[in-house]
Length: 137
Image 1 (tube, one colour):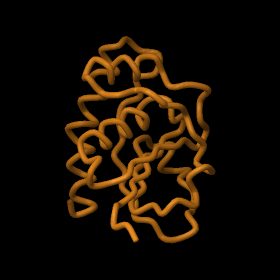
Image 2 (cartoon, helix red, strand yellow):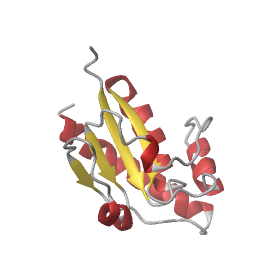
Image 3 (tube, helix red, strand yellow):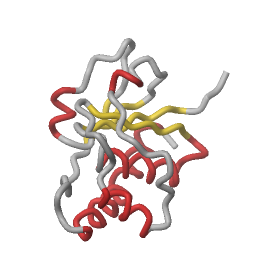
Image 4 (cartoon, rainbow, N blue to C red):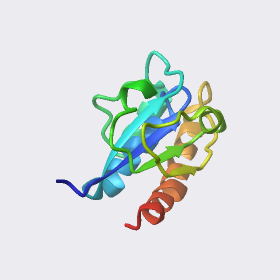
């Protein structure tokens, strides 16, 4: 039996903030946890700006794609993190009680690369320590 914790990052489109958060958390805390992301209304693809911002930080982007919340509903989630207000309001009821954390980030979709980089850095600065604290890591 594994003691590895699983964190779900939830956003509306699962195309930008939640994808960046998934990669950043996996990189920062990967040995201590499993990180998933999903959306309440997933977009067709990950935003180009999110991919570029991650690459500029030397982070891996292979295999990223938007996923629907239904694909992870029966995973053993230890913490659900909403990164946008809409996802917080529409966060589903999981099959078992799941602790939740809400940290909203600006949506850079449709903006210049610099906005994606600012959000990437904000996720690193605020989300990583919050998840560490929430899971006692």
